Image 1 (cartoon, rainbow, N blue to C red):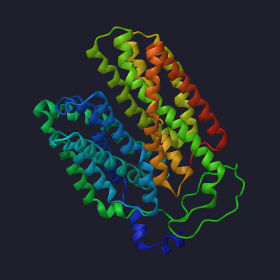
Image 2 (tube, rainbow, N blue to C red):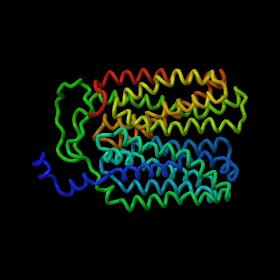
Image 3 (spheres, helix red, strand yellow):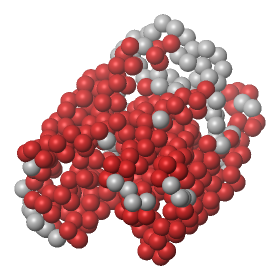
Image 4 (tube, rainbow, N blue to C red):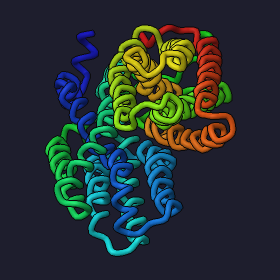
Length: 425
C-alpha cells in the first residue's frame, strides 16, 4: 500500500482526500433548482392560457414540447458528456432552465413562448446527465446513497417549482415570472465558484468494470488504456438486454407515477365525491413521501443491490394500491398514499445506479436513458389510462396500475436472476 501511495501523483492524492459531501450536496441543490423550471410549468399553464388565449390543444403542445426537450433528448447530452466531460453544462443548464421559464410571462406571441419553453427544457436536459455523472464520481463505493442525495433534489425541486411559481403569480401576475430566474442565477454562481473542484473530477483508472453477467466466468477482451477506455464486455448482448429490461421497468414505474398523481385527485373527487380543495392534499402526501422514499432507497441499494430493491418496491405496491381502493377518503387513505409514494419512488436513484453499473464507461448516456428517456416515454401511459377511465371508470385505472406493478415485479425478478450478487462490494 505504501508503494502504491508513493507513486500516486500528488494532485490526484490530494483530490482523493478532499471531502466530497459538499460537492454532492451542491449537485443535489443544482438538481433542485433546475427541476423547479420543469415543475413550475403546470402552475403557469392556466395563466398562459388566459394571457395568450390558448386552446387546450396549444396548452397541451407546450407540455409536449417541455416533456420531449427535457426528457427524451437527455441521452444525446449524455452521449457527448461521455465523449468529453463538460462540467460547464452544470451552471449553464441550471441558468438556461430558469431563464427560459422566467421569460414566458413577457413574450408577445405563442410561437416565441413555445421556443422559450423548449429552451428552458433543454437546460433541464443538459444538467441531468452531467450532474448524475459527477454525483457518481463523488459517491465513492456508496453509489446508491450518493445518487439518492442527488435524486432527492430533483424530486423536491419539481414540487417546489410549482409552489414558487404560484406564489410569484399571486404577487404580480404573468409578468412576475421574471423573478423565477433568481434561484437559477444564485445557483449558477455557486456552481461557477466550485468550478475548479467540479472540473477536477475524473474517472479513477481501472476502478470500475462492467457488471459480470456470466456468474463469475472470465470473459475475453481487454480494456483500452487511458481515461476513456471501454471494456469489450460492456456492449455484449447480455448487457444490452439487461439495460433494455431496466428501461422497460423505468417506463412502467413512470406510468405508475404519472397515473397515480393524475388519478388520485380524480378518484377522490369524482368517485368518492370528496371536497375538490382537499384533493390537492392527497397528491401532496403522495409526492412528498416519494422524496422520503428516494433517501431510503439509496442506502438499501448499497446493502441489497439494485434488482432486489426494485423487486421489493413493486411487491409492496401491489397490496398497497389494492388497500387504497378500499380505504375510502379518510386518514387511512392518506397513510396508504404515503407508503405508496415512498415505495414507488424509492427506486428512482436505484435504477440510475444500475444503469451506470451496466455502462460504467458510458455514465452520461446511461443517466440520459434512466433519468430522461424512460421517464419521458413513460408519460405516454397517462393517455392510455385516460381512454381506460372514459370507458370503464376511474377505479379501473387503479386495477390497471396494479397490473403494471405485477409486470414491474416480474422484470425485477428477471434482473435478480441475471445478476448473482447482492450489492456492490
